[in-house]
Image 1 (spheres, rainbow, N blue to C red):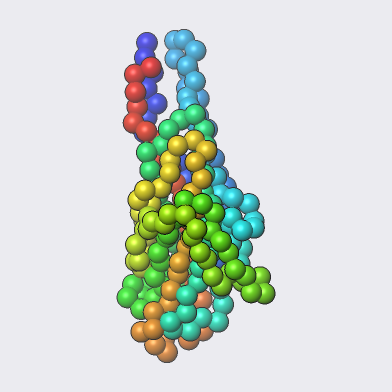
Image 2 (image 1 turned 120 degrees about the vertical axis):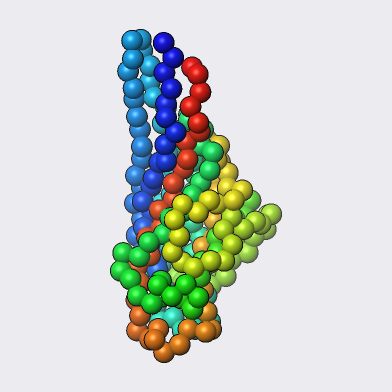
Length: 198
């Protein structure tokens, strides 16, 4: 008897307070039928703290026109193929920074084919350069999004996605933004391939 593993979305909770902290969650599944059958598994892995994960570096004292950039490295692993990487963001602590879609925080995700060249100043990333080929998996948009596909992201086992989170507070932000604080949680997910006859 053939067993088919249903299509699933697998989430890893990569959290950041306008940048802060990260955590990895993994899905693994097994199924049993009349004969031995094992469900596949995969992980979406966020690099540990360091140049491949700058979510631990907070952004404070923003003024209109400021830009925040943080490098993150995402790698799908496991024997089961995924067809896409997606990003969902939500505010665990909300303010006008995330509720104003026009004047609030805007996010762009860029990808480099090699690790980003990083320049730090007092431990804060101030510049990133891509010495390889660059693409834009997510074009500029309001900070809060649901299941946004990272266009062109690598999805095969072990392929590394060198991503750069570019966040900007538009120059049109007015005095209502003074002292505002938001905590933005980033959740990357992998979409498992469709079921096949096995």
